[in-house]
Image 1 (tube, rainbow, N blue to C red):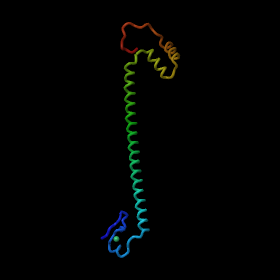
Image 2 (cartoon, helix red, strand yellow; image 1 turned 135 degrees about the horizontal axis):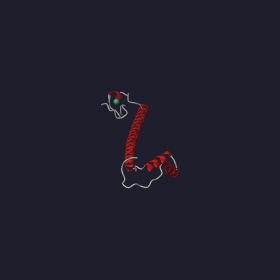
Image 3 (cartoon, protein in one colour; image 1 turned 180 degrees about the horizontal axis):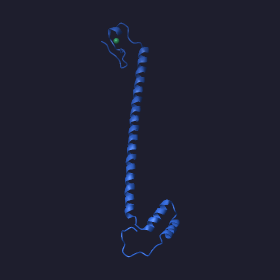
Image 4 (tube, protein in one colour; image 1 turned 180 degrees about the vertical axis):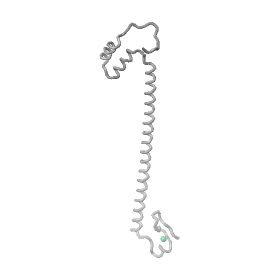
Length: 134
Ligand SMILES: [Zn+2]
């Protein structure tokens, strides 16, 4: 009866006709087959590890990209909301508008204030505030 070992060669205990007739694998062939099998196992293990690492890297990159995306969306949403709030809260006072515009242009505080005083001299506040733009 034919018995093979895990390297695919006729096992030491094989009792097939060939082995009985003396065609049993030599110790050198067994050693070579063992080396080849071990090398193949190592290669498969390395490939599996590389595959797992690759998948992990890929999904980490995908997760990072996804979270960057949603972070960007969050930031945009927040910016939009803040801009809306600012627009709603911004006083419709020409002096303040001018001051804010000058500050946005990069003018210093005192510079902006003096320009505002120059262009829009302050008037005594009127009674009865209206929403109308001047
Ligand atoms: Zn055999």
